[in-house]
Each structure stands twice: as structure tokens, then as C-alpha cells.
Length: 78
Image 1: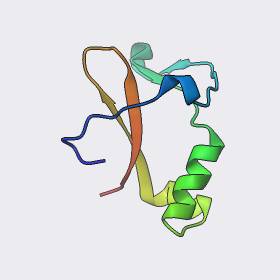
Image 2 (image 1 turned 135 degrees about the horizontal axis):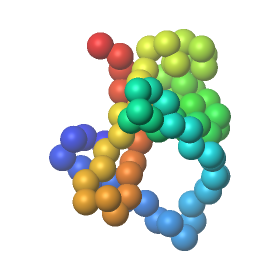
Image 3 (image 1 turned 120 degrees about the vertical axis):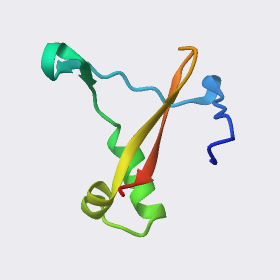
Image 4 (image 1 turned 180 degrees about the vertical axis):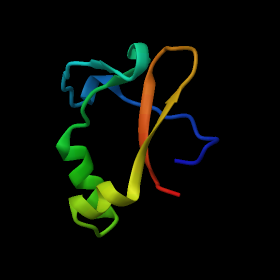
């Protein structure tokens, strides 16, 4: 997905997992949650990496606007 493309998700045929959130940082300004392991495993395979390599070389980027939803994608660390 390029920066110009808008993510589309068919919510009717979507896997769903629920995770707790945890406030971290000074004053709880950051919220931490988990990424389903299946997602990381699939992305690591696409990159022909082990899960450990993938975690070291990629970051999660959150895309959101208007707060109708948020989407995450993996980008290489710089």
C-alpha cells in the first residue's frame, strides 16, 4: 500500500482479536497493546526473514485520520 492509497477492510470477513491496553510513559501519554503473532509471522515470511530478524528490522506505523479507525503497517527501520 502506498502513502496515497486508502486502506480498505471488509469487516464482515475479518479476523478479530481483542487485547488489553496499558498506559506507559510520562503521564500515560503512550498506550501500548499487542500485535497478533500471526500477522508478524506472515509479514516475516513475506520478507523471507525469521520473526526475530523481522522485529529487529521493521517498525509498526499507525495510519489514522478523523478517528473512524486506525490501520497499522510495517515499515523498515531507518
